Image 1: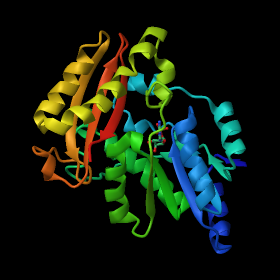
Image 2 (image 1 turned 45 degrees about the horizontal axis):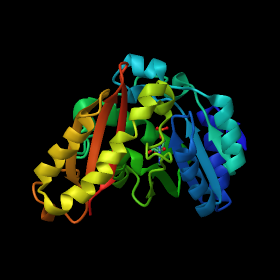
Image 3 (image 1 turned 45 degrees about the vertical axis):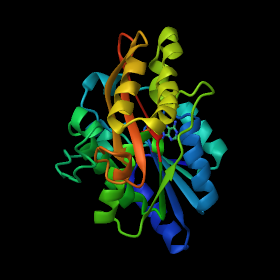
Image 4 (image 1 turned 135 degrees about the horizontal axis):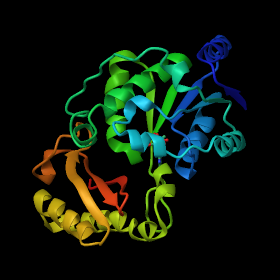
Length: 282
Ligand code: AMP
C-alpha cells in the first residue's frame, strides 16, 4: 500500500490508473479506523481494481472546536489496518494541503441537509460536501462507499453527486455493531467505562420500537422511543425523527413513505459524547 500526502502526487497516480483502465473505489474516512470502516474497505477491494482510502479529519465539517480537538487520531494503526485489508492507496493530507485557502463553496439540498443533523450542527453538511467533492475530484472514483451509520450523510452526498458527479455510484454499506448492539464509532473510544455500559440502550430501544410500531402511530412510536432512552440515567435524546428514507422529511403516517427510517442522536454521560444511530421500520 502506498501512503500519499500530496494532492498533486495523488492526481498523477489516479491519472495513470485511469489510463490503464482500472476501476477505482473510494472510501472517505476521518481515521481512528474500526471494523465499521473495514467493512467499507473490504467491499471496495472486492468490487474495484484499486481502492483509495482517505484519512482526513476535515475541519470544515466540525461546528464545535472542542469536538475537532478531541477527535481521536491513530495514524499508524490506521495505516497497518488499511494495508492488511488490501487497500491500494492511503491518502492522508494535512489541512493546509486540502484547504490552502478557505473553501467558500456552498451546497444546499433541502430538506436532506437542513433537518436533524443539519439543524443541530449548522454548516456540518456544507463541510461534508466540501471535502467529499474535493475527494471525488482528486480520485475520480467509479464507486464511493459510505456507511449507513451516517444515514443522513448518504442522502446529502447522493444529492451532491447527482449535481456535480453524474455517473458516480454511491454505495451504502450496513451498520457494523458491537455484540451488545452499540454502533461502532470512532467516538466510542471517548466513552468512560460507565458510559460505555449504558450506550447500548440506544439500539436496544430502537430495536424494541420496531415491534412497538406494529400497533402504534408514528407519533406514539417516536415518543415511546424517546421516553425509553431518557429513562436510562446518563442518556439524553437530542432528537428522534421518523422519516421518509429517501427524502428525510418527517412522516405522520406509516403509509406516507415506501421506506421509513428512525434517526436518533443521544448525549451520553457527563462530557457528554454525542452518539448517532438509526433503524429501518419498513
Ligand atoms: P468517519 O470516519 O466517522 O467519517 O466514517 C467514515 C465512513 O465510515 C462513513 O461513511 C461512515 O458512515 C462509515 N462508518 C462509520 N462507522 C460505521 C459503522 N459502525 N458501520 C458502518 N459504517 C460506518
